[in-house]
Image (tube, rainbow, N blue to C red; front, top):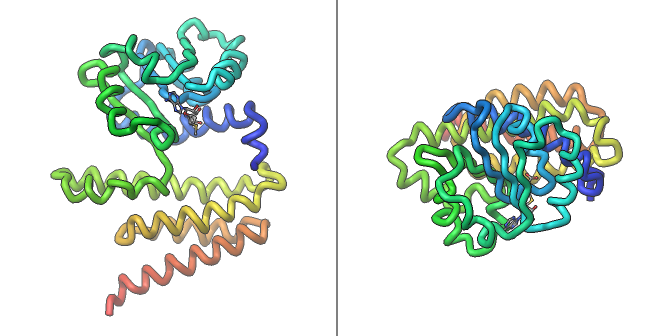
Length: 254
Ligand SMILES: C[S@@+](CC[C@H](N)C(=O)[O-])C[C@H]1O[C@@H](n2cnc3c(N)ncnc32)[C@H](O)[C@@H]1O
């Protein structure tokens, strides 16, 4: 278990940071976030993802099934100057969601769809929370990404969006590599970052074998020269070898 899983304040700050750095720029591609935008996060945990929206002046609601997490969220936001724009609700979304009828500009879920029960009924149920023209942001882990993705891709009449999503996912992985510059801030857990490279980058490449990884290869080579942790160095070297072999196969397909 990593320290961030025990120290919920660290986890809270990480969620707030990644929402600002990755999620909001992505959402900006399809809608504006401005004062008064109404946002619901389903499965908000301690609420770190919600803080950037609150700070942007949004009307923010967070729901989580675990009362203990909502209690932590209340503590983290106790002295926040915009806390009057924040509503936190402890409960199962299927029980408390009945009150949200066409109410939100944005429904946000991150690493939650994997955990929701009765998934087949979920999107139909939660879609009703959106105002007309509202947006649903769904973030989930790459290991789950291929589930159904091939079907979506094969049935889509908008291949450019699928390709754009692919490049967004690869871009986020590149940011993970850039983040390895901060390996020291992970203390004794730095070696765990290597496991992330071996496991998830391999999965990424398997999921998108025909994508363009030139940028990733450049980043991986640059970061290899900077990192100190032996496990990370090994994992990066393996990644580089994999990407180089893919490139040479593309250049010479026979
Ligand atoms: C992996 S955590 C993700 C938390 C947060 N979204 C984040 O990005 O850190 C999944 C969260 O979904 C919540 N959850 C699972 N099923 C739920 C349900 N039916 N209704 C509301 N919350 C639920 C869990 O309690 C947990 O806090």
